[in-house]
Amino acid sequence: MNTYRNPHPTAHSMRASLRREIRSWWLRLPAELRSPLWPAALSCLTIIALLMGFHQVVQSSVRQGELLRMSASSRAQAEWRCHALQGERMRASCMNQLNAPPTEVAEAAPSNTPALQLAQR
Image (cartoon, rainbow, N blue to C red):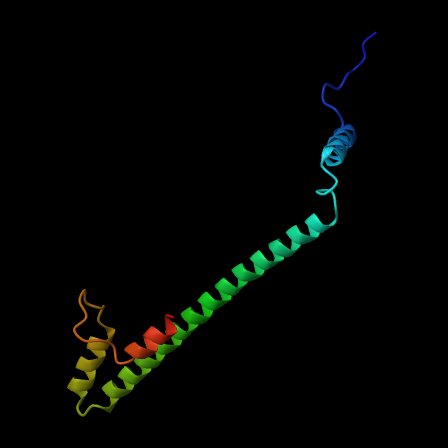
């Protein structure tokens, strides 16, 4: 008599045994820990932690957006000053300096340093 035997338990029996193990573990806990206060407190702490993380992400993106806006504003002002110069050569030279890659050491502080410091706080 050849019968096929499945060496692996079925998913249903695995779930039932897991459920029994969890139930027995839960019943072995002291009554104080089985009160509904603990899951509610843990849920509140989790929600607060997630909200704090969300706040940090939003605050960081607001700072980054403000720095990007200030950078674009500074660039637009510099381009306006270049275009306002007299003479084609001076305008071209100014635009070339503006489009050049930044040097290692800055010669002067940017014109909006206090605004940058305020945005970085």
